[in-house]
Length: 152
Image 1 (spheres, helix red, strand yellow):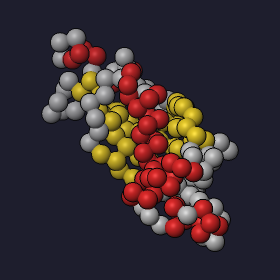
Image 2 (cartoon, one colour; image 1 turned 180 degrees about the vertical axis):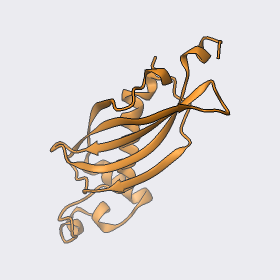
Image 3 (cartoon, helix red, strand yellow; image 1 turned 90 degrees about the horizontal axis):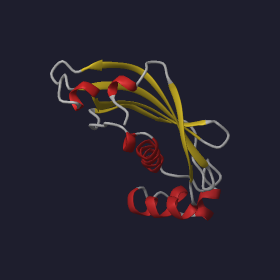
Image 4 (spheres, one colour; image 1 turned 135 degrees about the vertical axis):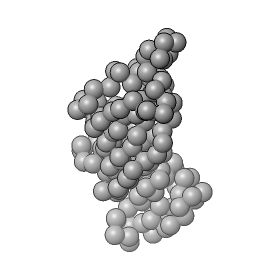
């Protein structure tokens, strides 16, 4: 179990590999972002991207899946007060394999809730060429080890 104390400012970690499929792109896009370059492989050929691309929010959903599977399920996660920024830097295509790089930028104990601490992170979603396709600045809340033992 990873607690707030276990995060070191400046540490960088890399997580997972997620293969993006054409079917997944189309299914997500038809439900939530039905633009032709997300839903129609033929129409997408004439788009500025030249092929079917994943909606940005699907990229964010994949980011969250990688984060949960490779960090949060084995951490004393208490949620998040929010995301500061999301930038989509390159398109994500069917067949891309995405991974996640996390850098802990800062951390502090919450004055109003001393049993938990906040970790400020920068996340980069990378494709199989190590190109950053999405950059996310986010904050995570984690239980403090002493509080988990009952002696906050």
